[in-house]
Length: 302
Image 1: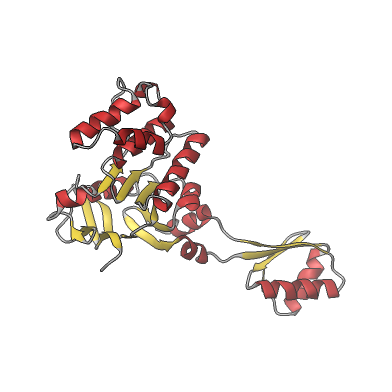
Image 2: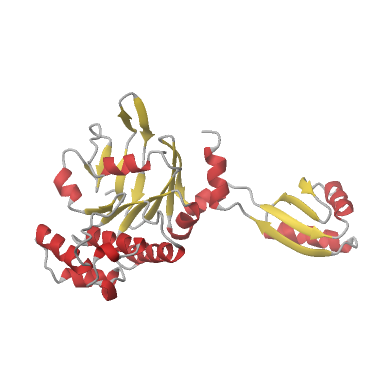
């Protein structure tokens, strides 16, 4: 049995003649936090709306929980929760009243509202009008509403968009808890690359509707070629020594040499060579590209 909660197979979608999703093949595994990355306008929200069946997909291209979505719409949607764009909350009601109201609509025990307010950290603001909530509190209430039916899958579209640093941290910690402690599978779209790097186990990078990369965070990092930075006195002479000994240098400045990182053992050999030849090495360290630079590398030619 497949462990894929979401699978799209060569999904294409058009607005008129404009192709906004281009041969998209997502694979989201059970229990993962899948970071769906892309610049604004890349096709992230459209893709999520297709997964929610708000936009109709071609037959046999979208599968949730192993079942084709168009022929299993109600059963699939019962197993997922979503927060797309702004949360659907009533400003004149308190946080608790918003949840109780949704409980009544879904025929769920009203007591569940108390548990969810605690889960998303809104217990102290339960009786405050939702219209008075900060943006971060509204997002957390929106996530609580999405969790009412105890879904296995959460689809979150830019949940940290517009939040202050505290709000971002709160949503980040909530997503990590939902996956690690409550067994939820989460697909979260974002253009905030540093945020995805902190929470995601898997990443899909989309640009102009095309999926340019899909894999684990570690596999994404492996695409980068880390460099070895050596801070050394008389860098030009040290560089000549390294070149004579077969090392290929990337760059040399007044007091620093850059070359491709190969292994920790190789670092030791380079350090020993320099020291034994009278050079004073003040620092030697590896630099790996962060996710932001990797993203730019992947998308700049597409």
